[in-house]
Length: 271
Image 1 (cartoon, rainbow, N blue to C red):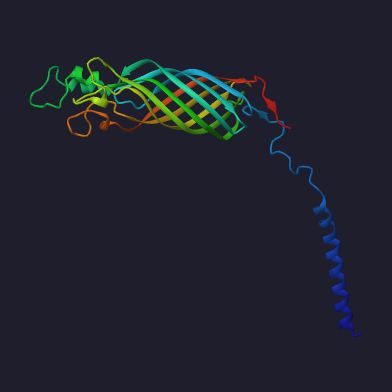
Image 2 (tube, rainbow, N blue to C red; image 1 turned 180 degrees about the vertical axis):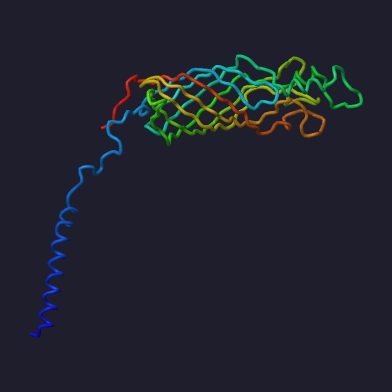
């Protein structure tokens, strides 16, 4: 065997030995099971939502009404199926309807008595009589909570929070400002009608909780109730008759703030 052949064999033997020395420990390490395998991302986590009931009460208001802002008390009841999915229902009940600035300006432009030259123009009292006011808001929704965490204020006050989105069904119970003298829209032949009763539709929005402790939180929600309404109660289509054909799908935004109680009052702690 020549010297070059011997040197080549020695190099190959050395490389093979190096590969074995490196590969065997790696293979052994790969076969070992990590102590963190299948472990949760966060241990000893406070389960503030999972399989707990939620009961809330507070106040709310509409925020985009044309003629009257509705102030209401509201109640909410929910059950969290797990830490990120829950079912809930809510109801808001009007305690006051406040005339908007738009209504004030509109009233300034309308005559006190009928104007023969403009037959479709309502009087001040006639326009106000048919304007809708909300009496109740109801909704049922499925809630999805993608974000949870903990925050601090000034490095001294710490609190848990969650942010959620929801969608479901909803509706409004409405009636005119002055229903006396107005004909129901179903049988109206005049220029105004009584838009009243329950108007079903959809419901969607966003919300958040900030927790004071394991069983008490502040809950804030912004929801959009979409239903077929006619806030003015007057002819919209231009056929000189106000009736059900003048109803159209519209959004009513409602913001609420509740004190929310959780049961059981002690939250579970994850492994």
